[in-house]
Length: 145
Image (tube, one colour):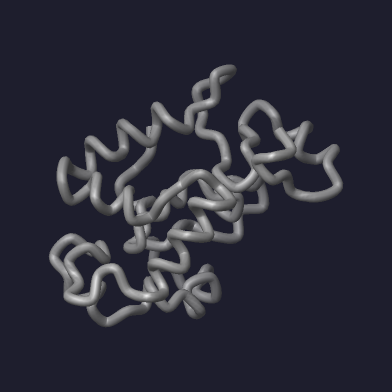
């Protein structure tokens, strides 16, 4: 299952991110505060937004300027490249609950072979198909599948 702390303030499901999934994990997820990983969060404008830090839920949807320009840009890129919408994710959490969203995400992204989650960036299950990824010279786009 996917843990709630792996859902970033922008609505990204870090459990599906290649930076989180790879064996030499260099990122613990956007909500994990650990000095060992501090470099991963320094550049994120959304995660470091003052409005996020003061929000009750920890998500962008509570902000008075939601959706901000940066979130719209991120959403557009992810919808186009990875079939994922940060805005839709946030609306689901807001309308239903984080638990509902986590269940929906697991069903949407689970590997049919082993039940682990597949990576949203390349469509590979890092649990059972890691050799498939190692044999590729570059990351896949969804069109390559």
